[in-house]
Image 1 (cartoon, rainbow, N blue to C red):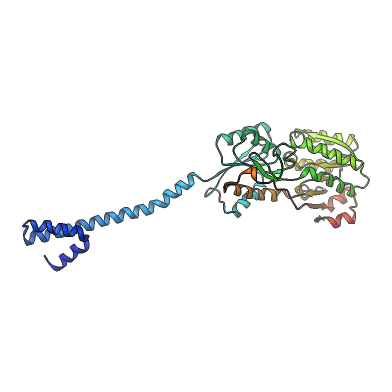
Image 2: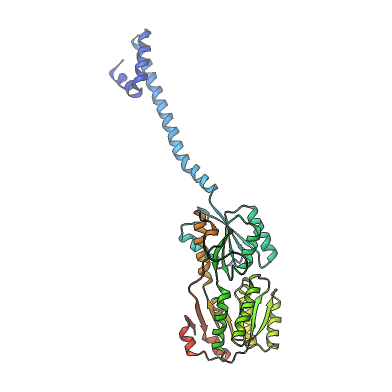
Length: 375
């Protein structure tokens, strides 16, 4: 056996195993050539074993990330978003604010979070059915913009966490026990609408000093608005205004409502913040212009589209902030322990172009308090 053969055998064979094999070779007379061939075969066998072992390790290392990724994909949270209005072809544009909030918190759809959007297209029964379907599919959490969607989800489940947003009066609507301690499985953000309605009527009366007869346009399909209407009624009475009820349920009711306002000699209009009125914003603004009614809105988009004035919090900010509740719940927080958040910033927007078209002169004192004046 040459020196090269002996060195190769030593390198390829662990010391203990090599000593045992050498003892075995010594007990049998294989001859010099036989022993050399055995040692060479043994060396080749050890090299083959080491190659096989390294191959197994390499395959394992390559497969591990794939397995981990597949396992992670199987357990990523799945969020249901329940919307009264919109369709997959015409989604709610405010949803982008919610998705942006999630991205800022590190969530990427399809990577570490799945989102299942459900649109009821304005149909309350479909909203109920969609909520029940999300519960059957056992989503991790449900996000519900507006009172109707929140009530539908809460009626469908008492276990799956629900994050509400853009809800006018969650306590008065019976959604939560209190703002500080919601209890149950629902928490999120309130628009504080019912508490701001009195302020809105005051602002409208400043813009229309001769105002004595006010009409309120609201959707009777929204359970939360019955309480809101009663509060607006009280605020109007305090300011010495006669209030005309313009409740609507279907899109065809808008024309009849404005005709009734004209018959009742309404001098101004209050338009509530609801998914139904927001969905039919363009139609409402067309009728407001036709009947030349000064109007105040709870949502800024009405003023951007030609309405006279609006006072309230940002809807987009509410959608954006809803992502923080989703994040906290996914990290282990319980909805019952998360206080309902109320807006702290309210914007007064006045459209001077619309005021001039209506023949109104907005007082300087009111313009000075406006956060934005559109000219």
